[in-house]
Image 1: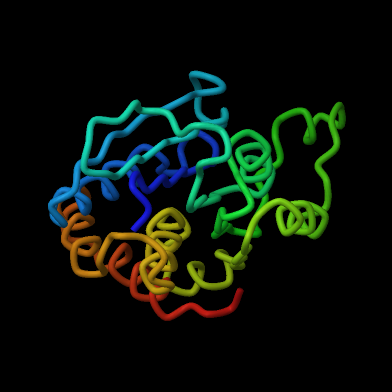
Image 2: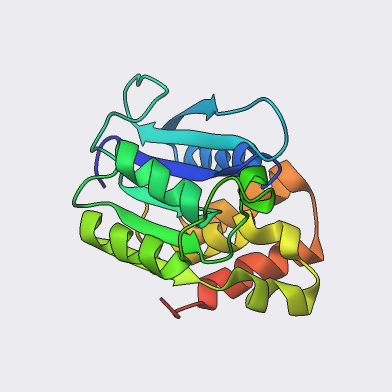
Amino acid sequence: MQNPFNILIAGVGGQGNVTSGKILATAAQREGLRPVIGETFGASRRGGTVYTHVRIGDTDLGPLIPVGRLHVLLGLEPMETLRASLEFAGRNTIVIMSSVSIPPIGVHARTDEYPPVESIISSLEKMCARVHTVDSDSILRPINAIRSLNILLIGIMAGLGISPLGIESLRLAMLDILGPSDKNLQAFELGLSDNTG
């Protein structure tokens, strides 16, 4: 394991970024590690940019991930994933991202443009070691669990085995933070078995 191991969750308000950070930190504690959570908010309302930093190590750490030291980026929204990559990613960063976009208000009002998701993915592939994209709607809509996107991505990370957090620690942490939920458990299990990207 890299020490510290740095995970960033990037998305917009209301997607479960902060909850995801709590799940990862709780799983790290179950593994006997020392997690630190930091959060940055682009706007203090639903729909604004939210980054949740999770740093896992065996010493005291600052809450924010240093530039270029990001190991795993969980991207809940494509444009926010790209923005976070530009700020924190390095050549060794692995991205796990939903390809489903949530255009900002300016795009709906036709004052801004949202780039094609394919061009976002292409840009990420030039910056990062690996980009794993998933059409989260096609996975979560059949089980009526669109709001479990964050859990799906955590499951994918666990299934890929790219973090120091074990599957069972993550599963138990999810139950600790969210309580028993068939939809969240299904989303996690679907993430574990996903190998599309």
